[in-house]
Length: 449
Image (tube, rainbow, N blue to C red):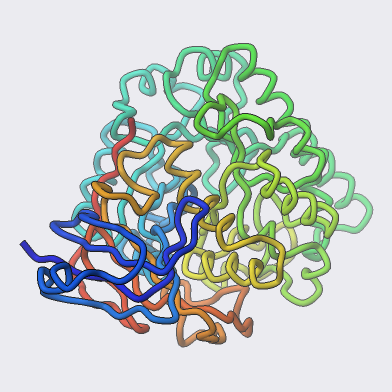
């Protein structure tokens, strides 16, 4: 069997940092230890990578992406966006159901798994979407092979709003799975929209987006979801928190693997604030909206404190022309999966987080939260999903180094001071030194305990 040695780098794993080495065999981590490998270990490996000056990290697990496959593949597809993922050190992802047709049936769900098996460079799972009339279908899904159910409690791209009281009650009370929610109150959004259109007309600039999709809209919806989940004992996961006020609804004392109600924050809500609309405009228009600097600071602190459990991207590519227009017309969403890890490490370099916290919230905590089988950690017997980051290797994001099919990023012009040097998926080097090492799909279907 082929044995690969990764050595002479700094392992960052489970809140420890040390100079060490990893031996990969048959797609798995066969050995991991501090110090230099013994001569016998070196001799047993047919290939070795000297990673001096690099961090050796578990591969990132992103629990919220929109890879636009099927039906919206002019924006991106599983092949192109999984390549963007591994170029950013993301080795596993969970994709959302608001595609065409929507992933709301068992047939549509398995069709996506079949597609990913043929083309995905990273490991994959797919949410099945909840609707007002498919609750019976959700009861028949094998949730050891599917990450959970996605429910839109506020409208977003895809028109999959779940607002029927009976359907909501059955969803929270009967479905034996993690329920991940997009949480914004539709009535509050509609009232805000009507108010500002009446005052200013239809041509509202993007600065009105966080006023329409307001902090109140988020809090009203999230508080109802948390109350309903507590009533029924639901396994609730609230996606992309964006406000300080919502944080009071979440527990910061219980370990993530023991929580019934958990929360996620996205990189863009940690990086940008409403002051950036003047500079970036629709490039940072997303749902829920990027909000105030005070909200951003509260989210950063909550992530460190533990009331927010994981970091994701909500990677959502649109073509550049689809991002044009006023606040009411421009598409919401941005492509972030390629630069999420380096953005978080940049914040670590600024003292906002530690590198260990970044690894915990992007790798370990998603594995614990979803109970993913043997991923998210650098441990013997675990799948060899590894991200190698070269410290101090600065690069500037440009249209020329963007992998996503959409071809743009809100980070264009941003200089990051670390770069992904290599990504390994299931023991295979898929990306190294700025190029893809293989064109063959290397991803596997995630399993959940």
